[in-house]
Image 1 (cartoon, rainbow, N blue to C red):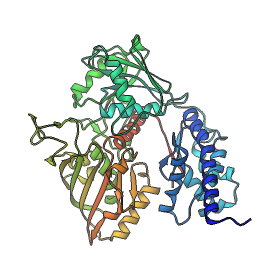
Image 2 (image 1 turned 120 degrees about the vertical axis):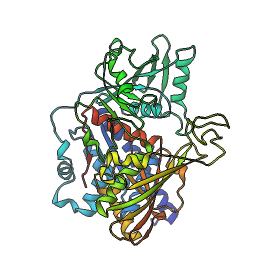
Image 3 (image 1 turned 90 degrees about the vertical axis):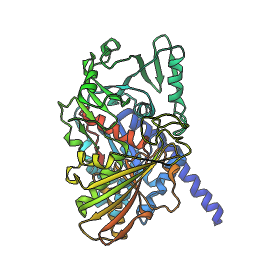
Length: 482
């Protein structure tokens, strides 16, 4: 019986849905049971719906001339689930596409091909010891970090959220903290179940047992009283930014290391994961994850500088308003920041351009920067006006940046879009440090203007988690390597 176009389409769609439905439990089992994060050309599939899995497969056609079918990748996922693998991020799309269309299998069976491509994590002895994590402060970044850590919870979780520390302790505080974790006006509802134990001061979320500790000073807590030892303290408050202030955390029993989620002063290492994370040494006690803007622009600047060389440049940040600004006109110690954030474009300063050199010393003194705060709650943009050492073209530069996003060591930091319709809200929840808007790229000889989007909350939080893993000595490879 010959199918009509409508019937053929419906049959194809139902097939995709069926295989996507079958993929969901395998993805969950690999993630929570073995610490393996499955993605399709960088698009994460953990906790994804069947429709989201299908949409992730559609993105392959943006980078390749041939589509990747859900039923094709399902075969590889099924084999993966039967292998003895150590924790890693595995791009199922690249593996399946590589076998079917690029390498043509290399004469190997699908299983042998996967074993060859994943040899670094196959049948390896040992498993990284879990690291106790404490979130000191529970604002925008603190709550997103909590979501990311809870998402990773399971028997093989390498980073275990054990506690959050906040000021307060008044009646109803615990319920309000839990409610803010449960509901978010920008990032949507928490994906799971949250309950509170008022007697124990505990938030229970998707299997995570999170102690809520009330304290007014970083050095006043005995974490061992809660069974927390050698903890990594992630300071999200931004109150203390130097060795002396952040060092207070280390005076608390049970605390071992401190990570600041804001730019730091003094001699503290400012780390942009993917660029200079190898600078973190085992004996480093205090480290900084730099700023969201520095994380967004530095990986791309490194890639361009390595390939073309950068003589100099200017970075203009179009940044969503933050909690530091006033909701309506009122006194503020900062210039212009006292004016209503949701009503005004607010010209202000940023240290992000200068901060790049802390992670990328070869650009010392080559960049200037400024910022405009705009009336949106999240997702920002950096406009980079660069004078290069070598001339290029729009097509060549975009092709290079696409390759960086897909195949380089910066592929977990740099995303790429060729959409002509994308706007800021489309990128809420994006897990990359920065997203190159290729349709806005301007090149004239050795002068290039790049537009880079970034989720200044969620994308930055993903970078912070990567720094946390590095500080804990947890290696989380991204495979395949090319």
